[in-house]
Image 1 (spheres, one colour):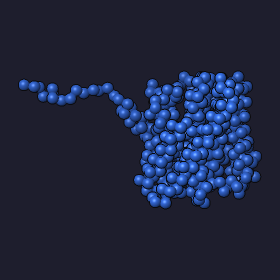
Image 2: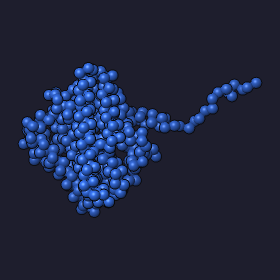
Image 3: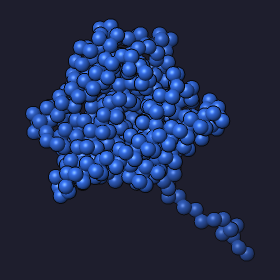
Image 4: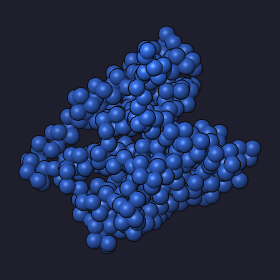
Length: 405
């Protein structure tokens, strides 16, 4: 007679990848909700901290060895975020208040130059140092969107924070792309080849952005994007165009940002969509910050701490100086100008992606600079976000019932 247990399937008690992803998601979500409810901090601080804790416990995902699935999640989440923040940029506002353009160009440029100078003083300058400073010069679009959404932040400081984050991201994407191409040309390729390659990537991104903006505008006339199903359709359109740009080697960062800008240019008021376009987009954002945190090597973070602190100080000084100087000319009070300068401190996912792409294209990006870049991302992803949240509260953009001060 066959024993009863022999009819049961053979069990494998070795955990697979799905288990670890599920546990990481649970930890990130619990930490995000905990910091929001107990401390009134943005959830993404919890998401990033969860990834850092997992990395410290031996569950790190080395940044330059990300599996295809993890990199696809990062690219998809960034596409959603950049499209969303691009759509928040009112080009008519820039035409009516040119000081905003001067402010954006000034704070990004001075942050880049001071960061590069700090690196040069510490013996880590050159074109690679300039590329790192340019990648770090922009403020994090994800943080700006989350602060505005989670704390119901409204006002001149919040709107300008979103605007400067979007414009700064565009400048960093273009600058790092050009510097990477130029450095590539110096190691064997002709300069005109490098410029042609960048022209192809940017030109293709413009075409793809125009196609995405047209498709979203067409779908909008037939669906209500306030509905969850229609929001998923929007995410699907963004991901389809992202796949196309990756296959054709167009700029995957510039395309969704430009598409959002083009779509907003067709209307006076921004569309009302679910934040990050519903549940699917929300999960992508959690995964994005968790992966960024898990990609941090703690030994590398310690090695890059000195350069990171110099970069943080130089970057913050550049942004605050320009905002204090030009903010009043653009219509802000002195207090609002300082608050806006402080709110631009966060740096996270977009800089992370720019460094990944630069290393992939060049292959010889100095490890000392990469360590400094990732240490800066980790520090500003948490401390910079908390400072920005405090600044919005001091500016009066966060209602007191939402935790503003």
